[in-house]
Length: 590
Image 1 (cartoon, rainbow, N blue to C red):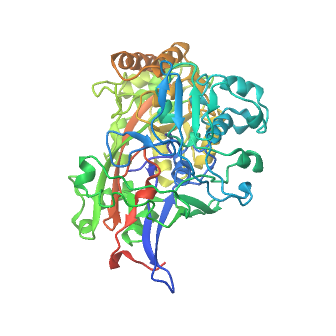
Image 2 (image 1 turned 90 degrees about the vertical axis):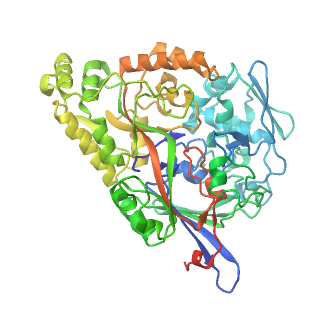
Image 3 (image 1 turned 60 degrees about the vertical axis):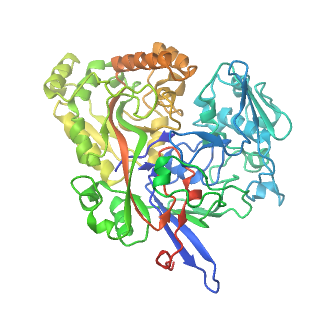
């Protein structure tokens, strides 16, 4: 999935970054009703360009308008990929190297000046153009690492292409079409994760007309096929969307797992999507503002802020009687999100001194960190891998623990007894919120006990990403929400091929690890892959670019009038499934 913004019991949609105000509004002079979702975001929207929308905030917006070939089934667990713009799953041949994908016909894009008043339908070539955009150096796509060395001829295209106009003129041997509705991808070697990649925003189709019209600058454009379309974006304030009046026939799922059945989430089975008519994303950074809006009934769901757990829940972790009496329900949602303290391995001191990094690892009381900043809703990390993926070992133990005496010994062995001779480091946090500042101060006070001085630097999330990409961060809080449930999606953050603008923000480089990662990418789940995961993890901890902290579990409150809500760490196009129960109590004036 993407970089996470910060944590409190977010996001990142991911929906954990979001809270929504969904209300049915009676239009004046009409008996019709308009259902509107008002969704605060914790930071600015960085971009709408599918080639670069890789942080949770941007994706939370973009996925409501953009559609890739595949999506995850909304109501089934374990997660299962199903066709979205594709007619069905791909035909895979050539020992896993040739994918033939048939695409739905007569799927129209949103109206846009680039189409000069004409209706533009999706073509197989549009997917090729988007993959070429990702490969094009001038696009500076964060998704290049997903395709590097993967598709026959794509790396050669990257070397040859100079401007966006080359997208139309330079062909790629491994990207072909058979008419307008069939896409053929030829890989250099098997890539079992490709199907997951084809469910990401990176691979949504982009017509060349739009690339040419906007000169490859799609940061402020949402040219998609999805159920909602862009109305207006006021950077720093809000972004408004409305129901796509020309959306094709798409139906609410008719099947779900046991949990979905028990929660009554199949009542709208077979009904056309979407149910909402408008969405407004608002930038709202502070937890308490969201909390007060929720209590006032102005928003319909939110992730419980850290400072409000004692109010919302009983000591046993159950919903308080007061909130239950207000027709409010609780959802506890496991996630594929983890957080760690990361080191810039290019830093001449931090990156070259293993014992210094290990001393820092022993100086952080992670149990207390989890208790203070997640109200014990987080799960202390025991691995670089996350629970819920194949190969994760719940019995795994980290090769370090909170031990100040050992940390001080390591500082002496590192050549900096009590910190003497050590410069002050910067510790960058991912957002300007009070919680981010408090977390930074906790790490600062922890490291001060062993003589390591740090300056806590607050950033906007886009500012943090920019500094990370430029290698200007020394020590930082890092996090990741998996884009798909596979070990490869987290382990690729440690590949030297994913250095910024890719997601390897630590600039970690180990040739042996790189080789093992490349082997792992070719494997399906099974003993060989799981053994490789253990070998990689052992080598990583011998280098220690990360100090794992915890895995997130999200606690959501929602008013029961909001129907069909199933929070998920992977499903980002969830708004099309939501509906307001059409009762008198559901209607509010705007």
